[in-house]
Picture: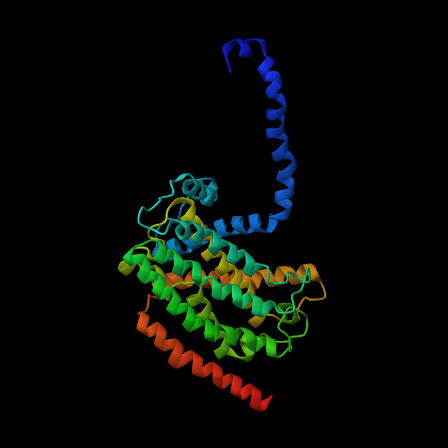
Length: 337
């Protein structure tokens, strides 16, 4: 494009449809994408404020100040952190398996979104085997972590990936048994069968040992304290994501916190559900969300309260403690029910 063309404006007239198309496409497709991915967008916003709540709780327990510079009392801090991670360079390791290294963060986030689709939100849709489908997504969530640690070609990342695989294999056995146990009373594998007014008492009050083991299992499944051995800073620097930065690290981060919120909802549906306020759907939804909110706060509070345990203690607790106790509950249920 020469200066004479710019002076007479003929080239601008030819390029006008292109510029118009560039502006029209976002205007048309933007609302469509927002409608299709509205749940994912809302979930990402909740994850941002959930991470801010964790930092506030940790600062309160430790007696120090929480982030309070960006926005009113630090409300906009998650947006600032997200922009910082988005603008950072994504490192490309020369001696890594580049394809697996790049794809694993996106796969981890996709599996997290897929697990959210298994939960029926107040009768909007039902899946006949939603519990089994949820277990499949949860089991597969350890695969991107394992492959990411191997693909990074780092000793710290590889050790963290091996730990993640061993921890997932161990605790998913008990997690699956504890997930199915509340569904036995409804004789169905749908989460919607335990979200109706058919319960009169919390399963957590009827079977406290099962509820306690379930809470421990979700902490181990989400790699939270005291079971955050996959990200042990004093041993593995940062764990499986030590070689990740920028948007790739943000995807792993959001996947972890998304799973924490999901397990809070699943815990409320299975062990803290009853028929109260079910005559008014709106009041029932608020009641359900309130219980899930306190479960999510419990997961955050565990990081500030409990110290990290050793890996051998983690394995012993599962194989010699939780698994025999869970199987004994199943035997009791089969014999006496």
